[in-house]
Length: 400
Image (cartoon, rainbow, N blue to C red):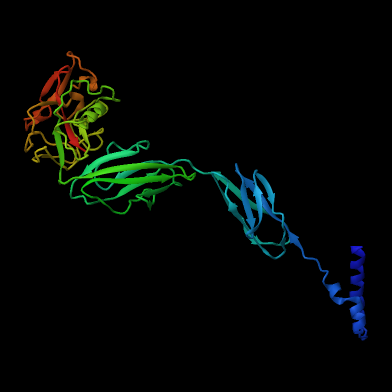
């Protein structure tokens, strides 16, 4: 029936053209009877489909064409929107809803319909990263304590009073992660703005957010001193040569003792480490020519820094290698007691030359450890001689 009507309309159109061409003017009644409008309105509108291919999809993505005609897709492969687009009209494919834990991007997503179906649109889906850690962290002043490690989330250290502001430079392990320092966005590997420090304890929070929205929080506790130098104290408590006890190693056990309750320890929240040498774990100098930082392992004194005893008197100022020249002490460590150091009286700062109670794990009378003399201002302040590890001595603790 549709074919017959179309043929009738075509014949009417031809007849009218013939009449006009022969000089015969059809009457309005004739034109109305044949319906010229009906004849010309039957020219068809051509439409083409829009589609392409999805790859890497593990969930469900919802696409749109020209901000409508929603299409939900849950598997890789070819896709086609249900509604066609007129020839000569524009198309624009976008992602309305991303799949869970994935990000889908559109390639070849827009253009103008020509004379064929569109089949070259690509939807590429990738799984969001779950890495929410830092690969590096540094500050404009002070030294991180403990030494930075990706899995270590908390750090505490001191700065002198003259440091009124500090910047933090965090570097994300994954470049797609975002970083906030005290709730302010920071570009990975770029220093934050200046963060003001009050005298006393200050907390800086660094939040790393992965693509999957999981987070890790790193915390810096910074003690701004009332003084413009760092302190060293000698513990009132004494210990035999087994400084490790239940800790991972001798130096860690010694550090725990420097931060334990002690009558000589300042009570302002500052953190300390033990000035001891331990083979392979804590070394000031590994060779006679001490070159910082290549010769050092977890050394506790900062370079070019003034240190005072608990009475506020300057003991020494370190050189660029984080040590002091023996015989140059301007005051003693303000203690008549002796303290373990493990530093040799022969090789002085060189760790390999000293006795250290089997890396501070032995309290045997048959094993020795080097110690310093608290009333001395010469090299014996660090390396007096050695004693049996079953004897008890104090520890020399440096502010971090």
